[in-house]
Amino acid sequence: MAQERMVYINGEIVPESEGKVSFRDQGFVTGDAVFDATRTFGGAIFKLQEHLDRLYDSLKYMRLDPRIPQQQMAELTMQVLAANQPLLGPDDDYWVIQRISRGVPAGAGKYKPTVIIECNPLPFAARARYYRDGLSVVIPSIRRTPPECMSPRVKVHNYINLLLGDQEVKAQNPDAFSILLDINGNISEGFGSNFFIVKNGVVITPKEQYVLAGISRETVIELAQGLDIEVQEADIDLYDVYTADEAFVTSTSFCLCSVSSVNGSPIGNGSVPEPVTDRIQTAYSDLVGIDIVKQYLKRLG
Image (cartoon, rainbow, N blue to C red; front, side, top):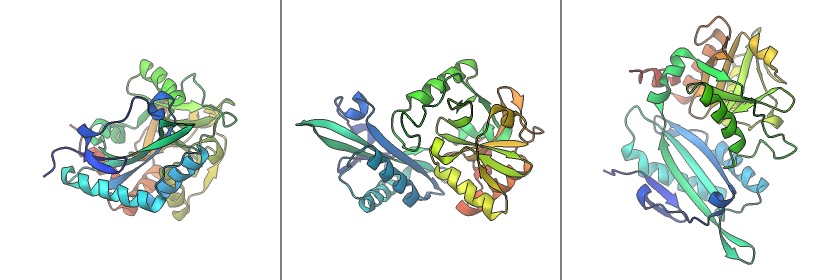
């Protein structure tokens, strides 16, 4: 049985301790790299096709040729997951991540891309309390990079804008999660998460052109519509947030998790989860074949 996780790097699947990337790699030197991340449920990968579609859209936007067709990327991803399955506990799951950088300069303005596929255990124990208590969200002073500068729909390694906002929030409250406003004062997104509110039974989330179109976000919208819950994409300001009946975030690891407060102001009546969020969480669990809430809560100490 393998004792170390395996990683794909540039044509080989090797133990992680043997994986090496050059210090001249442009992903390190300039942040010139894209990535995508899905997860497993009960060891089975979720919506790989959709994640790879987004990955290859990001590659096109960045004019970065991975020199691997999308179907082969899917096959390699499944091989890496299979190589790491022996280390997966019965109640554990992985992030499954593809990373492509422009690589090391090869002269004459040419580059040889670096392609990495990895598995990383999901932090169920560290995050279990958020499914019990809800997330405390804090809005930092840092604003989200506007789409006039770079499209938020591309998933790149350069997370500095989101990271600065998250660092500001963590300096105030290490347990809080950051959600950034855009330059117009409307809610945008967080560090790897999309934001939703519920008002009068209607689920509302920022417009897609201003945020990364998360696969979990898309899944929640589809599930809500299947439950005959109205969904709107609209500008959301802080007044809308403070007066919302419910709020939640979506992300690959969380799926969807209740927000209990924003800037210290309680959301709704304080129960976790609130009714609409609970219905969508149940539908999400039915879709993936695992109770996503219990998977976290069972790790509470």
